[in-house]
Length: 215
Length: 290
Image (cartoon, rainbow over all chains, first blue to last red; front, side, top):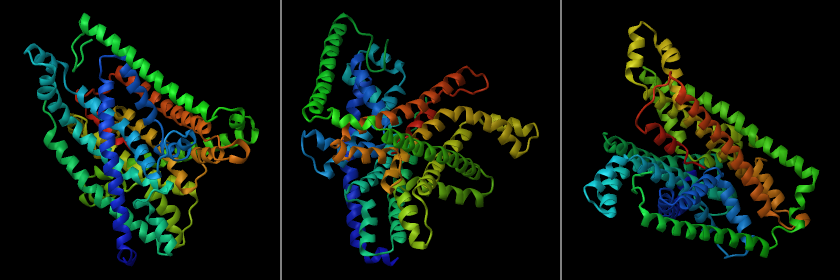
């Protein structure tokens, strides 16, 4: 207990950094992932191919490798110099975007073709169809898996501790430098993540129950 | 082909799509060309930077590194499957005192990041006098995390079976164990096999987290060779491309195996096919991790 109370400011500061890293990467990956999903459902085969290649490559690469690439390999290309923090955000966003893309795409695919055909037959424009028929249905099946993707992102921010980007995973470094008990420190970090993740899991389950579309 | 969002294109739309295709190809080619130009401009592909591949010592260490990754994957997968089976059975138990603790354990291990678990076993436990090797720390963490996820997958698989299956089996006078082993498990395993294998792909990718606790696996090998400025002038780019290709190849091999099993399943009359998309959504919710 004393490990936590003596270092409370350290824990709060680094968990705050975790949340900041999470928030920025979440927004970026949601935007990029939705754009990629638009590519993957587009009627132009080339766009679909580009989207599919991106998703296949990023989904089958370990996140740690993406981190290594942006922190150790990318600087050698001498394009634009980026800070380790920016590199971490880039790696997390690019990696998570592939998963967001898959969630959005399969959400759109769960809407039966008949729904769109019926709305076109009724004379709805593309925007009306998208806004009033397809997206409201797709959104319901997207939210639960999207929450899981975001939970995974929150946990994945700890990978940055191998690359000198301060967040909750770096609490270990700070504690062992001070000579504090790392064992209990790490237990508290684990408890911190359980506390952060549990409400999200709960929200996900509620959405899953309440929003499951009866078809 | 009519899709949800777009109607079958008419003549005008087809022309528009062709123009967009040309633009798309041009943009993709331009992006690739730019990256290749940067590679050439910063001399990534000079003979000195590709020289590492000629050394027998390095080739052997690469094989060894892949071996380490694969053995962590193999041991981790077997342990995780066993852990998952035991805890799925516990969560489906009729006794609340078994069900409750199992649910708590599974939920907690699913919520803790793998990195923190690995740190705990590798850096934390020595404080209490227990010293684990990096390999053991990686394997135990993989078992606890992926085992918990697999337990949820097994449980969902059994719960997704129509209730009539177990009711009919009970009506025939089967015992609880018989219902489970002869009726429910064979069907659930067949239906869940693709999901289980895609979780194993996640496990394979997660072995790369061993990099953070100095486990000598493929990625660590890559940073060691790639960071060698003295002999090869930091061939990080070329080495990382090779490492990425190996990871992608291994994962795609597993994914391909999952698809093959799924196809074989579809022909199998013993499997109950469900119309809804629960199974696919489960894949999506389970495989978003590092």
